[in-house]
Amino acid sequence: MAEEVPLRKAVDTAWSVYRATHRDVDAADGRRCLLERHLHRKWDSRESDAEELTCLGLAYLERLPEDEC
Image (cartoon, rainbow, N blue to C red; front, side, top):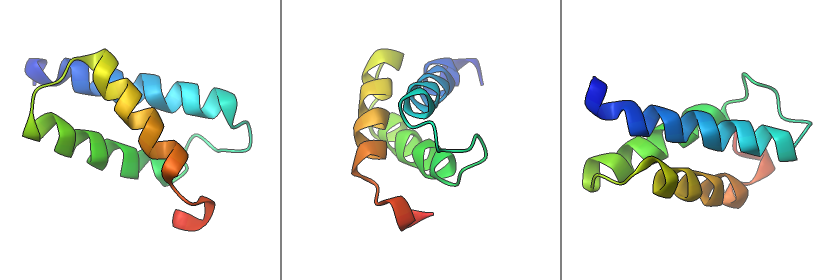
């Protein structure tokens, strides 16, 4: 579990930044779950650091259609 700390940090950071720039998004929005799954797949395919995963997560969230969730 300790080996997934960068993954958890990346998800939390990307989600916080996304919500700060999209004030209409609720904390319980389904996009967070999609973000977690997306970054977990990235983490599984190659161990990235938290900063790289955060950037990948933000780019992913920006590409999601608003009606995705």
